[in-house]
Image (cartoon, rainbow, N blue to C red; front, side, top):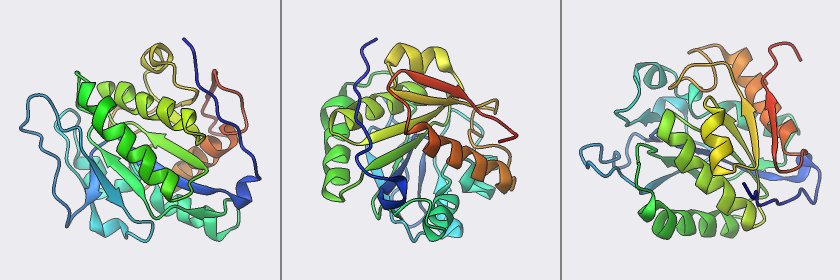
Length: 220
């Protein structure tokens, strides 16, 4: 597959980083995703960088959300990303982070409506880098399309994969293959050490060329 490729033009310590997940994450006060729509919900939700974990929830029907509801960081590691910004590893976390529901098989509306809007929002936010976290099977396909569009727009991406056959078929530019379960792409609830390792390894992956897939390492 052809793989679009953007390149880092500055050190990570100067980069603004956005987080995207297709695991159905959104702010509790926001409108939930429409899981009753048989075609899926192709819309997106904006999650500000200062959102507290207790203000997050997930709406999805294709994986068991009980783990993500008690610890949203297993699908949306915003807290860990903010900590890396505080430590100076990255420049800042974007105030526009994106929650999606990846339970979509026909991606036409995703491609012609949602992706262009999200890319525009992130470009307006001057995002340099995007980290992408899937939820279940079809989420890999939907999120992979976002990764490709972001790279074409000059935003460097790194995406978690649990199902590398799907992400390779889509042509996702850079992937971190993790040994975790669907619905828990960043590890088990409250295993914050693993969460930090996942995010750190995603950031390291950004320096690699398109076409790179690396395996998550428990010991770094």
